[in-house]
Image (cartoon, rainbow, N blue to C red):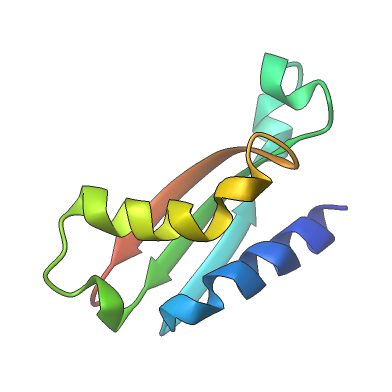
Amino acid sequence: MSTERMNVLKERLAPLAPTHLEIIDESHFHAGHEGSKNGAGHFRVVLWSEQFTGLSTLARHRLVYDRVQDLMPYPIHALAIVAKAHP
């Protein structure tokens, strides 16, 4: 199931044209956490995109959340984001 969710995240983030994209399933770190009891996952995304150039951290995170908002709180309970314009 984790692979499916990671593939959905990859598809959703594709319009941001990332030059680098890592999607890391961190669900195992949150076993027993209230949000994970129903099977929702915890993920970390690391992405670089030219679309982030000149944007604040908050604005970059909003662009990411706009792409995945309907996936939260299920099947994704938490999303940690590292979004940069350049490596």
